[in-house]
Amino acid sequence: MGTSKLGTGGKTVPEPGLIATASIATPIGRVHVAATSTGVARIELPDPNAGLRMNVWLALHFPESSIRAGVTPILKRALGQLEAYFTAARTEFSFPFDLRGTAFQMAVWQRVLKIPFGETKTYGEIAAAVGSPRAVRAVGAAQAANPVPIVVPCHRVIGSDGRLTGYAGGLETKRWLLEHEAGHEERTLAAPRPPRTKRTGAVSRIPIVGPQKHPRPRA
Figure: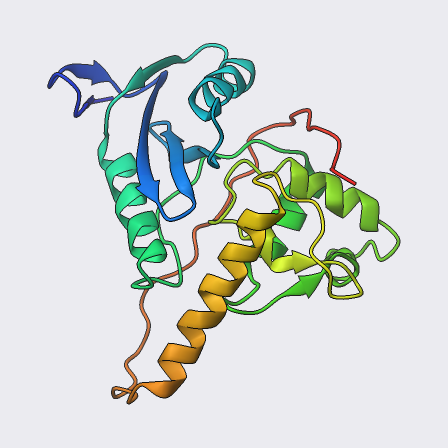
């Protein structure tokens, strides 16, 4: 199957069964990221116990895998793109995912992926888009279970009255992300536009690889 070289200590380890973890400093705090040999599996938003929380989550959802600090090619790519997002140099992500969820959760996350940078949708709009217009609370639960916030941009989903509602990283983080994206759009509109070129990148697909339990959404 080949090997992946981790950035810590230069050790070579088998790809299957390995989850590599690393973190980056951002304007909202230190963000922790974990990736399997398939793709990014978890992004943990800033919290005093973020590293521990991520390791516990990984052990629960990937019980047969070993967890090691270090940087694989996939993780390096993801960290670079996240850094570019926080410096307003990137508005989309193209690294692969390795997510676990129910069919409904996957449908919600796929729809949330389609919300353009700098725009928002309501929980009701997402529920209608996945064919379950009455399932607003279930959409909220799927949002709470999103393993890769920022990249699957659940911060772009707001209440029907326009208010910010529960977010795993806290409402201040949600507000910061929305204002960051709105500010980027304003700067882009004010700057001279370069000639348009054909876009070749694509939004990462989320493979459905099995069910998982998810936490209750915040009120």
